[in-house]
Amino acid sequence: MSSVPAAADVDRLWIGLPSPISDRVGAGGHPCQGLWWAPRDSSPRVAVIATHYNVDFSEHYLAPFLAARGLGFLGWNTRFRGDEIHFLLDQALVEIGVGVRWLRDHAGVDHVVLLGNSGGGSLMAAYQSEAVEPVVRPAPGMRLAAGLDQLVAGDAFIALAAHSGRPEVLTAWMDPSVVDETDPITAAPDLDLWNPHNGPPYTQEFVTRYRQAQRDRNNRITAWAQDQLTRLEGTPAGDRLFTVPRVWADPRMVDPTLEPTQREPNSCYAGDPHWANYSVWGIGTCCTLRSWLSMWSLETSQCQAAPHLAKVTVPSLVINADADTGVFPSDAEAIAGALASPDKTVMSMAGEHYFRQPAGARDAVADRIVDWIAERFKV
Image (tube, rainbow, N blue to C red; front, side, top):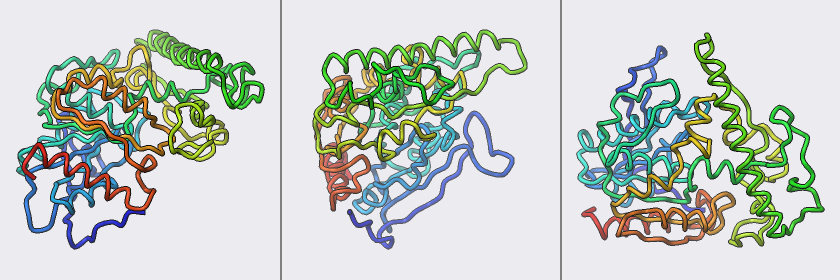
């Protein structure tokens, strides 16, 4: 495993800020929070900011590695850290903007690099897109968040082991054999990934039919959510919670002959895919009607990366992890293909999703990122 740089080389500063949407909550916490990592005894001219839809990135694994190499790093969280259930894109973008503006106005950096890691890839692309050409719509029945028209664009974009978009990754992982969304067990045999009659290995015919059934399931949930919003309009409720079972069923998790890489066979981020698929863990497992339509729906979500990447013209770096069990080379290829930047670099590096393995993987990634940034900006 990569050794973490010595604490003596890096300073950390806790940042808590209000947003244009709200000030502190009753208990005292700010909606926008994070950690500023910087090299000791120097003021970095270039800073990286990383934010995710719901994962706490304040102590992001790359922060000490990049700070020890002379960059600033803001591990930044919006109000939706740990609160995926209520995610709304326009509000999240406004609060990412709070972090970017802090880097410009208070940290005094000359250049801001947007780091889209894992699910954060499409989120940071959406931020840059909205900063240069606003198009984001409010959630049904809501107004756009205050401050959305005041975002400050980044100077470069990095997609690191990034998914193609929130609706895309959920749909690729969804179990299309679900017969009843309220029944976690029953499975349609002809679409059951663990029915030995289907494989593995899986035929191209099965995979094609399976992928279409995944899209169909996503669209059925969207239609149901839209109908429910209509039904609840004008009632005291206005929205509701619901669950989405069985979301660890990408055939590539089970069959390593599909899009071969260095990944461990029959594995996913939660361990064994069969166990994970029937567990209560997973992305998108609990939603409101509006958060489904905002984040997960193929039909209505604005969290798909491609439309935003088409407006990202700043220098861009795409790094694929060659042993990732949830992001695949086709994801990196899709991101690179959608980027509008005339200056884009695409590479694959040794490591699983978080580059914990092999030994030295995080050092290698940090070195490559710093070298790439130094070729374009004065570090």
